[in-house]
Length: 157
Image (cartoon, rainbow, N blue to C red):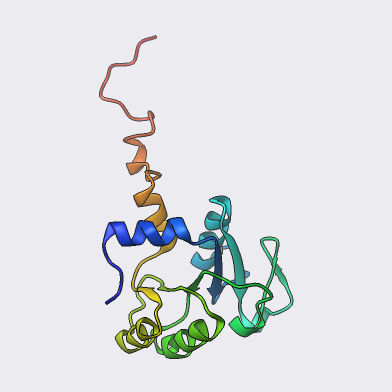
């Protein structure tokens, strides 16, 4: 059964150090780019995987064509691909020995999840690690509510 509870998500995000991002984009305006940059800023090593941009550099990391091409082991695979790619990504994730398969927002594939779980992986579907990290580790600002910018107190000059 995919991980959905806060304790399970927190356990994943605190144990993972290296992430392969399948579908990472070199376009700064794409969600995968922003998520990669954010996760790097939180201390994760994120290795981009995109066959169309293999060999290029993205945010200081070389882009690889496939998960099998990665030069180091990864703890988690973060999938920025359509749901129909999930079975292949799950099989590749199992093959490289990652411990977690994370499917991004809008991506759910119960059969791929079952395959990954049967191989001993933890699976997350339809969530974003950037959003969950911010939510679980107190980084969401609620539009200024807990930033000190907004206050119910009268300003003193």
